[in-house]
Length: 295
Image: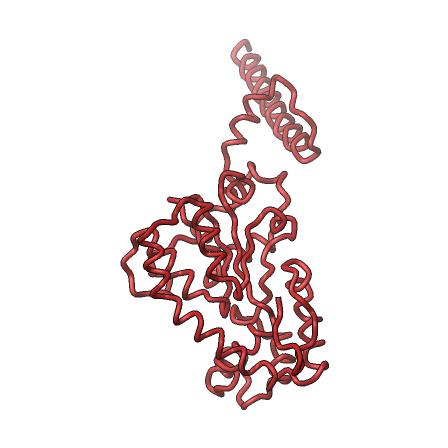
């Protein structure tokens, strides 16, 4: 009889302990989701939870979509740990130049540039919480380099869309397309060569160094001096790279009036890339015979 009572009592205690544990878990979860400060007796549980990667970052203002963009395989921003730099680059905005430069200042001897084996570190290599931590860390310099959208899109069209096999591979369009058709197609066909250059919430750009293609030389110097990477070896390397950059710029400029000879085409670009124009302050003046430059 005594043994039976002991068993009943033990069972009763175990049930109550289980109920208490469940209630504790639900209460803690509710407090966490409701942003209510945890009670002192549950502080230990809070400290343990704070060590988990997915629980550190919930109060930061970066959307899931923005994180996905930062982790995109072929366009993730370059991270230069030695100089605490996060660099936002874009295809058709002197990306080859910048990748080779960052290889050089880090002593990376690699002939690969547009390959994930190029030796460069990108944000996609980090966890979501680490990315958020870096983006909000003021000791890290954030910089972006961009190009006037009309120049960039024309460059993309001349290199990609005029070649039927390439256009089919990228957008499943098996024919030669005009420039205006290309602009209509890219509304629904995403690719790093013509996607918008605004990649993260706009407030990040307010505290970011932003350079444009027409000022590539002066911006390079400002950026490298800012991060402490400016020296004689870099100057010599830049002198060797200057000719390539200048010829590339002249080639694109010479074709602007040929393709932008009406307002309809330019209005379409102004609309499609309104964020780029607003955030980076590009001039929305129409190209014409009297005015063939932009800022």
